[in-house]
Length: 365
Image (cartoon, rainbow, N blue to C red; front, side, top):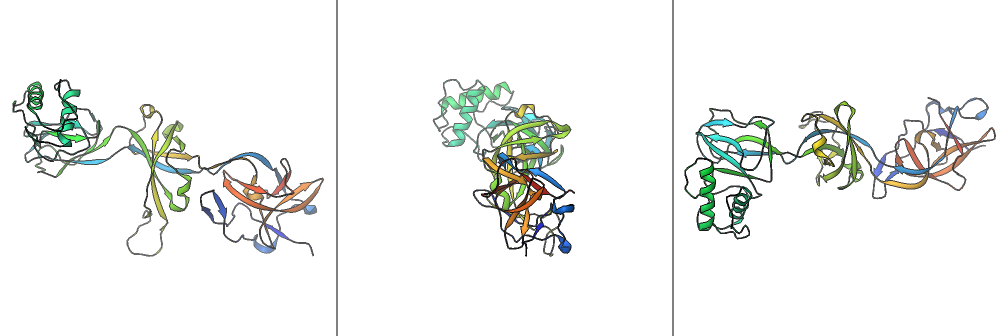
């Protein structure tokens, strides 16, 4: 009795697992319902497609959100009443005003160490180096050694010049409430306190970000190997505009997707997710609004010069494994194949009887 096979169709119920080299089918195939083969009269399939040789990519598309890098809370450095706050969406550069307390400005300086203490003559540390670098960059610290972490008499003189330029008391010292350090220019995402409030030390005044545009998205942990730092991506922005970029980081920990609710009940989508961030090759050209939805096309792994067929050309062989139905000279025969990587609706196949250009049967849906 002739060996029979069933179309897998577009609803191929195989589980795709990512493991180093790409995707592999690890579940048992399903048979077409009702035990009927989807073929046209005469035993031939209703449609065919060619076996192709070429590059196959495992890339996929995911939905993401356009935002800005390095979001953080900016806390008040001292007590008082807020008398002015930078507007949402505004960008603040070095020495620019972030907010005012009791009419006195808190200004932005660049550095990675937070402003955790007043700075005065004799103090030593990385925060002193940061202050010196900023004073030099602003033109007040000519002659200062930015690699010397000591607050010297020359540092005090430079501070007085800076204070004089802003019509402030020329004390030669910098109060904890006078400046805030951040890694670079900051964009005000939102205000956490309003004019007239008394936030108090350590209480948030502003939520700020860097000015560089980025995209964040989540991907199933099982597919995380498709997103590697440095991989190129294409981002489709609102209005159909596209921009190129690369994957900046892939989260090291996975968390359950809680979009369907969470908390203790059963059900819902509890697949583990990994957060991925993307930077743009030309961020200045990205003008879409903050928090806009975008689509990210991941390149994934690419196999060069492989044979592939449409996924719905696969047959589940009753004796186990997979095959395709090769159509030649008005006849159809089943050929067993080994499966490789899946990508863009096609699957890599290998088999001694397969050649480029052969026609394989597919269901006509």
